[in-house]
Figure 1 (cartoon, helix red, strand yellow):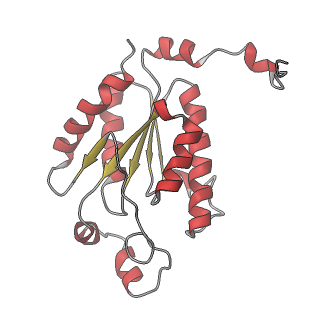
Figure 2 (cartoon, rainbow, N blue to C red):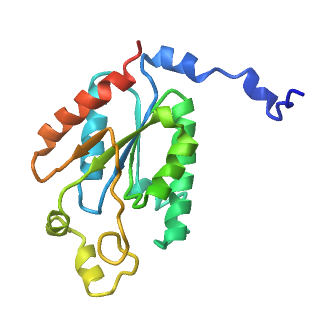
Length: 200
């Protein structure tokens, strides 16, 4: 027997396809993962500007606009990190269904956590970007002094020091930002991303 739709109002709403056609783009979630200091936010901001200049409608999600609001009640335990990513993925899915391209920049340290995000967003719409410089480079870029505090035991469950980071196996892009400047990195990423977001 066919299951009854408990949200019939959505049968009358505009579809994702309608919105994609209007904005002339395919909505995807660009998921930037990597250690603190890897360059996730720097690259996602730079990519957002490039896409905006090309006429694409994007929404940036990162720790600053998520942890200060919707997730301000969560800590950094594995349990809280999982809930953090679950909420982020649900928000990203809403934007995606609205036809918008999402740039999500989060450490998301374990395969299980990223698998959860992918299952919520949808495998075909989840484009994983591994921002992957060596740990020592991330520590050199540590403008907030977080690694130093973690090394001294002042921050618990800090990814890369007292909590593990599990590298993605098959990301869309694996980029070592110690080898490329921002402009070069953006060029590499755009080459990989554009075929996925162009409306055919």
